[in-house]
Length: 507
Image (tube, rainbow, N blue to C red; front, side, top):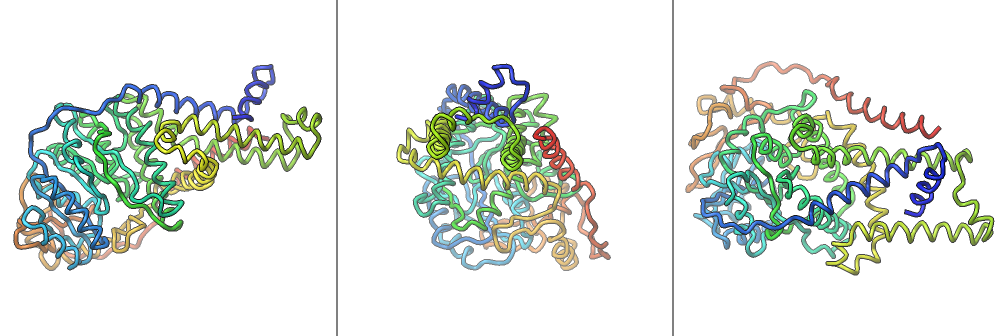
């Protein structure tokens, strides 16, 4: 804030140079101001939904005690049914936990790894008017389901998400930081977008959709590509996009609260954040034409989400360059000449730290009102958020066109052609029983590909995301060698151009 004010004063005073940090800071404040003004109008929904519900829980692997607690809390709230879709390798432990809660909980197994395929399996088997998709490590609180369903009393609402916090955030600095980020989003971005009826991403920890919408968009959900590749990541954002494009509102219900786990180690946190960065940005570009025509405020938010990390990289690069070559206007000359080098430097650094903390405190005032003690952690929050998230967002932009999988779960979908050999093998073993996503529609499939189910379960579908559009799964055929995707170069070219333009402005 201190440097920003000095630069603004300098530009207003007639200096011809436009300072990149001033532009970056002005955009930060503009985004925050719009979110703050919009979110002040937010009110939770209070209607009563009386229809039927189904809960779908895709799971690869989970600590059994945690998974048992997850299911128990769902069962206590008595949805119409709970369908657990175990995908990938068989997991007898998870199957036994599901059996403890039968018949309300029923499990199915599909050998095809991947959350999207599991979502499809569960949705096809579900019978409720509302399908609630829940991550297997998400813990409901009292009233989660009732409150989540309230917005569906309005026919225009197609998708709803909850307020989300991190389990036991005091465990480490990572969980505390992750919880802070979640709470900030819940207090500013989510309510602001909900006021417009256009929450751009309904986070997947617990989200609810009208089942009729899911069935209508399922083929696109399973087959949409970006830059020539199918991307498993960002399933929640993709379903949100498809719901908005179908003409429905997507909203946030603050009174429905869930808790979820967070990584405890930096490498896993890095993979999680990189997955989110890639998914968010590729979906922004894929959805941008629609947003510009139907949701311009949402488009502005997401464009800034992509642009600001590049601007910040340019700002840091400019500081390093000018400090190295001694170029640029010296804003601190007056202070240094008056107080001397030692005291002057200390004063400048002090003003920079104090102004940065106060600036961030103002933009985090709602969170600090809930947790005043975090005011003293603001410097650490600023440093971690800047030095950790900024490069991840840029790397995620560069890698948007690369096929990849989940990255943080053993046994999960690995991306690209990872599932194809398994699909071909299963197709050869049980080809007559196989039906495609395009053919199954709203039916209950009693004999899916490689199907394993509990005795009280009707059936399952096992469909590879990359193969879902085929009418039938053919026998194995010679596989062409994997080739580089030339379209994946476009993000590198665009990102490099952005950084190059900033570099030219600095010089």
